[in-house]
Image (cartoon, rainbow, N blue to C red):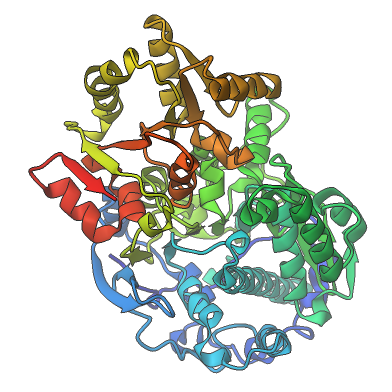
Length: 615
């Protein structure tokens, strides 16, 4: 693996859209920070920022071949801050042993000063040892990052704000350095042309195919509103004298009529009083729940333009569904294209756990469309495009940062198979205590393990085990009150069809069930007119129903979200003959360890016994 940048004759990075001339001239030599004025020798790698070192490195064909093999060798571990059960693991050389970095954390000086002022203004004083500074150093390494144990804001997670600030600052640093470099080179080109000179050498190869450099994928408009607001707050005052279309953005992405944080808190508190839903549900879904959005953000010297044309934007903030719509339209209509995704250098996927509850396949599709050769030229100066763009190697320079509250095979697969950054990888590894103590009722939870030859056959093996071992016990039950909790919609459909074929008495409560049918199903189940209810994790995620009259709970597949397990089991409260059965296999390790704890999960997967009981 390649651990960092070495001296190569390929300096400079960035690109320029057809609009970059007059708008970006304000970030030229007279406006840039002192660090750029002193950087005259492009071959002095010790004075370069990680931004320059990363983008100026030249890959050999052998290194490209190694990256395509997707063999990642994690060599080092460093304890995570304020998380004794977690460690950061990485490939290549360890860069976290000394997080002192430069005096300005490798940020543009003005951006660093503003960051410190904002941090101290919040009442915090331990900046040098803060979590956001530590995580910024990880982002600034330009390696691919997987953080899957982030406690989100809707679960009162303070860490979420620190992580947000860190990746927002990394985004700003990347964008502002990009614009500075292009503006300086524009001035040099104009000066040389005025003198009749000819420019050559790699120093002026600073473009991509299109201007957008950062893509941030988020699940909901309310979260996008929070991220973009923080992006603006952390932007130094000199770059935000004017913010275009802020009113429109607040109206379309905000919760409507909420002007200040105090007002927002009052609205949130009143909603909680009126609703019986859990507080985390209200915090996540109390705002704008639109999951179909896309907005471009452009930095223009002293102003920020929201709703910029995508080809003239520096940052694109979108939901996976919003981008999928654009991709689909480009496939149908020849005059449309998505070339603005061709030069993305930093991809951030935040709240990946919420996106999992939407449709993760959209994320895979979006990532597969990144860094492809464009269909059109889009006014780019071809003579200034970086060589690795022209060689089709842009994916090896793209940094991907994935953030969420838990890990699952889909996220893991994306990180291992589609994130091929030559710098290497950093990921969090955690030991879990489990959530069994949050089960507040005295119920025996019986875990039954079934065997599966491979992950490709695990769904079939689970279904066969249910049909042969579990269903015969409940088929002729007179008692009723049997709930089948199912994680995936495909399993839901399969069980529905099976119960139909067996002429069983059942009702449905899934994510696509109509509200009128849901109300009817809950009444039937409560009154005993239907003996079995099928309930999906997504339905619980979006509605958080409290189902009554459950006597026997069968967890067909463990929930992805560990907090749902005690919520579902605690619904047995008040039952006379309560029981709980859980099906699992060795391929459910991610989910199992979050619920029963890492130590118990390892024992349950490797033990010769197949049945385990928790009380």
